[in-house]
Image (cartoon, rainbow, N blue to C red):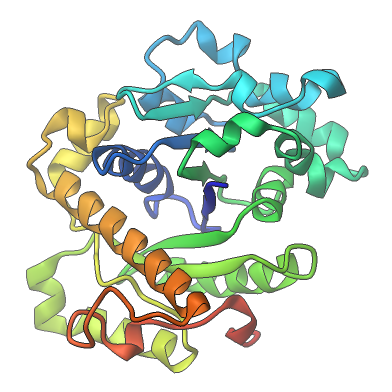
Length: 296
C-alpha cells in the first residue's frame, strides 16, 4: 500500500500547497508514482497540477464523496498531472457544501476512509500526498484519519506560524485516538533565507525545542526562491519553471530524505542495518512518534 502523507498547518501561507505539488513532482523524478489529493476547497493544488480546468467539476473530490457507495473511490476521480507519474484528485468550492452536510455525521471523520477502503487501484501508487486547508474542518479531519504520516511546513522566523503549529500538534494527538498509525514525519522549514538564518542563528534556535520533544526537523529546508513565487503565480510546479532551480533541487532533496527515513524505519522493524551512517543522519534528527509530543 502507498504511504499516505498529510501536509498541514493551521497557518495559511506557510507553503503547504507548494510542498504538496512540488514534492509530488520530485517523487515522480525518483520514479515513484504519486497521487495528490487536493483536500482544500480553494483548489490551489488543483490549479497547479490540473491543466484541463473542465475536469475540475467532472472529476472532483466532491463527486467522489457524494457518489453511490458502489462507485465511491479516490482513484476513479483521479486525473493525470503535469508529469507521467503524478495524478491529482481535484477539488473545488463545492466541497464546502459536502462539509456542511458532514458536520454532524460520521462522514466528518470517516468520509475519506470510505473512499479508500476498497480502492484496489491505490496499490499502484507509492505515495499519496494530501494538501489540506488552514482550518479545523472535515477536510482536515478526514485527511488525518487515512494518513500514515504528517509533514508540517513552517517558515523559520514567523512567530504566528509557530503559535499555530502548537495547536496543530495537539490536533494530531487527538487524531491518533482514531488513527493509531499516524506519525509526525517532521517539521519542514520553508522560506529559508540561508545567509540571514546563519547570521541570526535562527534555524538552530527554532530547532532546539523540537529536538527536546523528539520531533524530527527535516535536514532539508526549502529556501526562499523568487522562482517558487513565479511558478505559483503561473500555476506551475518548480520543475516546470526551472528544474535546476533552488526550488526544484530542495524538493528533490526532501523526496530523497523521506525515502531514506522510511527505509530506515522499515529496517528498524526488521532489525537490519540502516542505509545511512551516523554522520549522514545524526541521532537528534531521527525522533519517534506523535505520542511523544506533549500538550503545548
